[in-house]
Length: 390
Ligand SMILES: Cc1cc2nc3c(=O)[nH]c(=O)nc-3n(C[C@H](O)[C@H](O)[C@H](O)COP(=O)(O)OP(=O)(O)OC[C@H]3O[C@@H](n4cnc5c(N)ncnc54)[C@H](O)[C@@H]3O)c2cc1C
Image 1 (tube, rainbow, N blue to C red):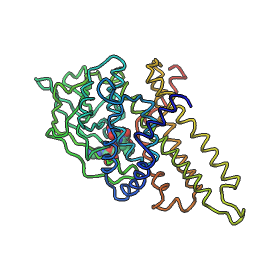
Image 2 (cartoon, rainbow, N blue to C red):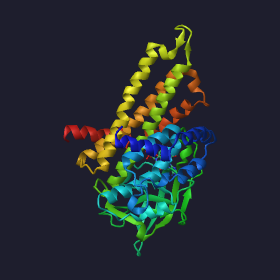
Image 3 (cartoon, rainbow, N blue to C red):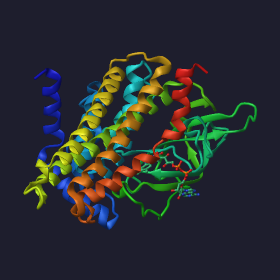
Image 4 (cartoon, rainbow, N blue to C red):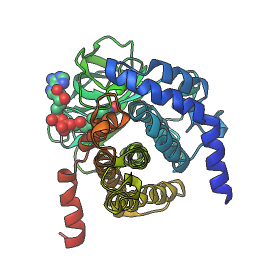
């Protein structure tokens, strides 16, 4: 075993030991059924220092790399996808700060002290009908004389809505109509003007409680404004760091879901008996082939995630190819999760269709992967243009 694999096993044991995951898996069914937030999981993750994973050693944290966090998130998602998806948003915010520091920009390092002090970061970027995502915003950011901004708009799907204390978000400053500018920064939860929607009754990933956040003249203090970037396709280290952490950590969650679905598929084949064959389905050639094909497809997913994470950790310069690599890693992972869940349903047959079966929930959780930006439809033009040179 190489040092890297030994360390990965040690981190799994330290942060997500088997008995902890068994509790998370049991509770995931309850959170889903009762449509409630993962309070108990969060308490245990916090106690173990999971929310500090990305904080560098120089700032008093364990200083994990993106590759290491990706592997942990795959492991967590195999037990509790909703918990993993939501905690991802906090990890991603801290991963962004680490990534910027690794590239020489320490302007957001103060976030590390806040994380060590127990603050929980959320990611409030998605807005209804904003397919520009990070390159545009339907939230108004109105500049004030003191350098602050008043933000008004709706952020949809804010995971961790019951508990976050810091929100990384953006809005559009249109005060100069010729030069619309995106304003990125942080909001504190107790700032007047923030309300959280009471609507949340969705198909999957229910424990994430990703409720909409409504902003009405919410003041982003001058010292919490991180970036002013021209709207549109303008490269910037902050948005690059967000994209990289977002795509690879979201992909990690769905890779974990895919892996767990395949384990349930194998268990399903072993448990089902064929009266015709006189054996379990684990010995029926068609079933074995189905399982084998799904496994072959899945294995490419963690490999691609790891290659991207390690390149990112090692500051590899893929230039304009980065978005192609990052988005395909996440799309492949979410496709694999949905396909593996469907394969697993075929392997377990009717029992997996029961709402009390873990697989039925995994199948629903996997569908959330359809909605993370950019969708396959939104991404295709980028891939076509890259090959067609247009
Ligand atoms: C489980 C899950 C967790 C996510 N977590 C995050 C996160 O933490 N941070 C983040 O930035 N993004 C998050 N996303 C958002 C996601 O990444 C996509 O950006 C989002 O789903 C975009 O969907 P869409 O383009 O289909 O939305 P659109 O079709 O443009 O919008 C549709 C959604 O917005 C809601 N909506 C529309 N108008 C309003 C309104 N005025 N008030 C309230 N709700 C309204 C609708 O009910 C519907 O749910 C999450 C998505 C999922 C599925």
